[in-house]
Figure 1 (tube, rainbow, N blue to C red):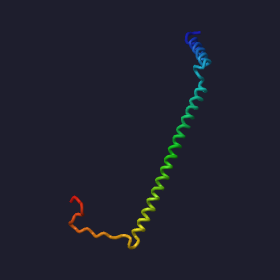
Figure 2: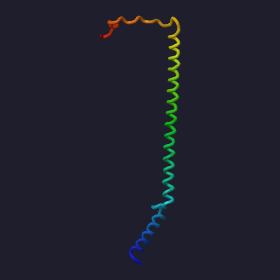
Figure 3: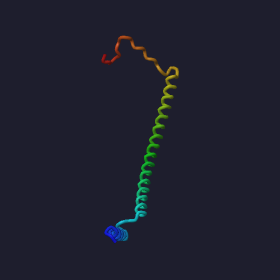
Figure 4: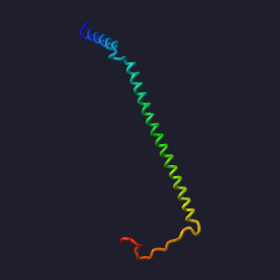
Length: 104
């Protein structure tokens, strides 16, 4: 047995001893732990995304509601302005004169 073979045998024994002591885990266990950590991270990320979607949905509903209220107010004001006798026309400004309180 040459030096390289004896080193491999000794290294294999040392590796098995560390695995049995729990200091080095096998590749399957390592992969399983890594996948469990990824699943937990993905669940947290999904929960954050769900929360963001819920917040954005609430914001959208509020914005659409506000726009609808503005639309109805504009329609109401247009109908009120179109009603006869409700709106008085202001006289046209005379050319060459500045309005009261202007700086020009």
